[in-house]
Image (cartoon, rainbow, N blue to C red):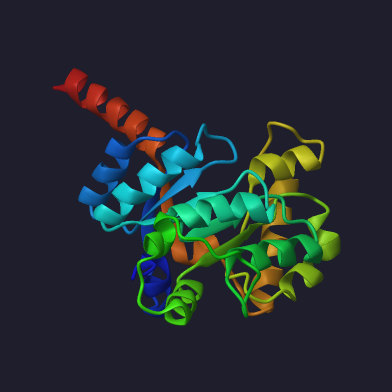
Amino acid sequence: MRVNNVIAKMKAGEKAYGCSLTFPSTAVVELIGMAGLDHVSFDSEHGPFTPESIDDLCRVADMAGLTPMARVPNIDSSTILRFLDRGIMGITGPHITTGERAQQLADACRYVPQGKRSFGSGRGAYHGDFPSGPEYMEHTNSNILVMAQLEDIEVLDHLDDILAVDRIDLFSSGAQDIAQSMGLQGQPGHPRVKEFEAEVAARVHAAGRQMTSDVIVAAGAARLFLDGVAAFLQASKSA
């Protein structure tokens, strides 16, 4: 059964390296695997991903030795289930602002007794072809990574409640939306945004929890291409 490369790296005290996509491309996923990275993440909150494309992307990720993860468009259990049933092994829930929303995210990602995920027989569950249901469910629960994105100013009023929720593995930021929630739209580098991020990270660490940046290093596929082309043109013009 599939093993989550990111979780394996975390247990070994190492960082996991990967790439994020805002568009579906099985060819790019294959190349990410060929490059020797650990994981690939799909931004389905903002990108044009469908259940069918996620199914194909996860299939190629499995073949390429990558752990597929996704930021989901919302934290409804039916939405998250569609991603997990395709084979996604890491879920980032956007706009986690309260303990209730954190609990909703955690419950949707794992089977009983660690959560309330519904059981299905899609490709993520090997099309139902496993010898032991309990063994499959226990293994899958231990290989799902659940990440809560803290990207709203109101998080500060509820952070203790959020951090009290079990089975949230990592917490992440989101400077653009933090800035908007502060009335600082388009200013993700504003000092107030940086102060918010620093306070959240400090409180997460004080609670004995981790930020995604503590264990995951990821680059955007589009940014890698654009930066690569810029470097190529600069080198060619200097030759």
